[in-house]
Length: 307
Image 1 (cartoon, rainbow, N blue to C red):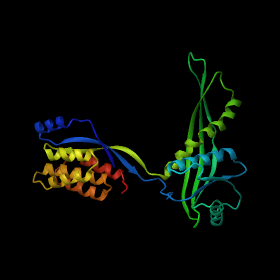
Image 2: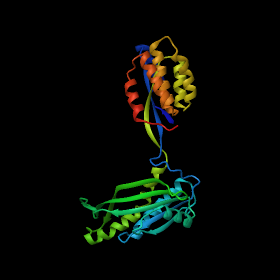
Image 3: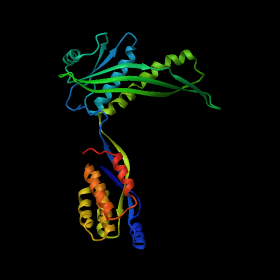
Image 4: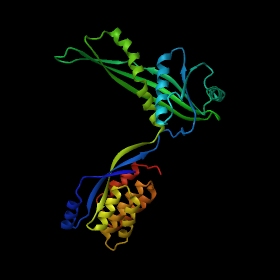
């Protein structure tokens, strides 16, 4: 977890707590690690991408997409340009079986075999947009597209992942005169080819972890130990913050113990131990009914952290 302390002044919070004898709440911004949608091990694996073609396929279009995917994977895996090879695969009635996967693996000398197939563009939507007073025309194209991507282990021929993508490209074309339908039709493939790298990047991100920003709350009471714990949490030092809250959680003051236990639940979540976070949250609820406990419990149920 990565965290950033919000801009609420600690002095203001401390004075407010003194005057009200109620716990204050400090917001922190955190970045949560999210597991890949398709957890295929790609590191240290040689990869080849096969663009599956049939009689109806536009070979240039499918090859552009395959190359866009290869380029994106190379960047994400920090590999040299051209290290992931792209091949064409003629699709026939026999389909894809284990023998074919092994043959492709041997021919391409690859541990993993990616097969890109069923690439198609649906009927485009065209929206002319004459800008008042402008000497040009703006036309928006919406191109719905579909594709399938299957990943196989080249040695065992086991299917490791199947991804079906359905998305829409939105493209603006600026011209001096209003474009004729025939010109727009010619532009469609050009637009799709230009977007191949972006499409490939959108596909490849499914195989890598990512970070999502969220906000968490920490309770704060007056005292140097609370301030020290809060500063430690703001510096990502959850172990030090937890040490301080552990001392407070045994306090005879139920409200203080509940606040410390709530904060320990957050610390456990930040360190990837969701089960222990639930235990501390349950302990907090028994000590004192804090306002944010129910909301945070629901947040925990909706968020799963990777260890």
